[in-house]
Length: 224
Image 1 (cartoon, one colour):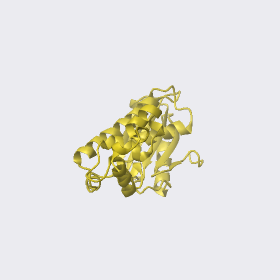
Image 2 (cartoon, rainbow, N blue to C red; image 1 turned 90 degrees about the horizontal axis):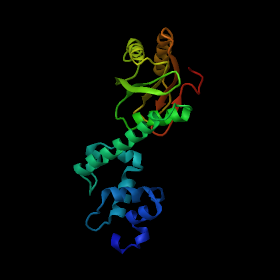
Image 3 (tube, rainbow, N blue to C red; image 1 turned 90 degrees about the vertical axis):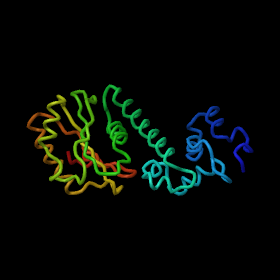
Image 4 (cartoon, rainbow, N blue to C red; image 1 turned 120 degrees about the vertical axis):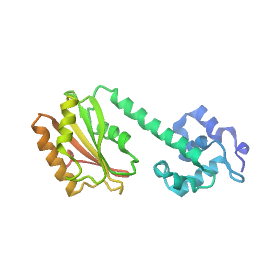
């Protein structure tokens, strides 16, 4: 069926204008982004096919350029547009949280960290520096690659905390494997960092390990 054959109430753009973006399905939202279909396939059907191929919007957003461009109807231009859209969304959420008075709950901290580190293709260790009211001073990605005691340097974290005049920190790193369960190495380096930061009276509030859909909290497990 051609898109123009659908009732106007079922056309994604018209539906969004009338009912709001939250009334649209994932396929309808993606259809608006794609704008046009391909020969023999209207844009909503194309969007549905793409989501069926990748499984979820998250998997689509995290796809490499090669994976993305293997799908009929997609190309480099659309890949660039999609990545720009994803990054703007990530920055919007991070900016919104930064402007709030403080991170007053574990969920707010989770949301902030997720906005910063989700969909990273490689392992990243980051630190969220906070003032004495737990307001965000700065978020910094400090180490890359395998996160263990050989690749994360406490002296660098201490130096950064002093430079930022931080009163507290939250650590975070992602597991590209998608599994959020902290490893033995994760616990060991966290203990070393806690000991180092105690020397300058900086409190470690939490360490989040980010997977595909879950986030593990050291604080909730009583590890910090």
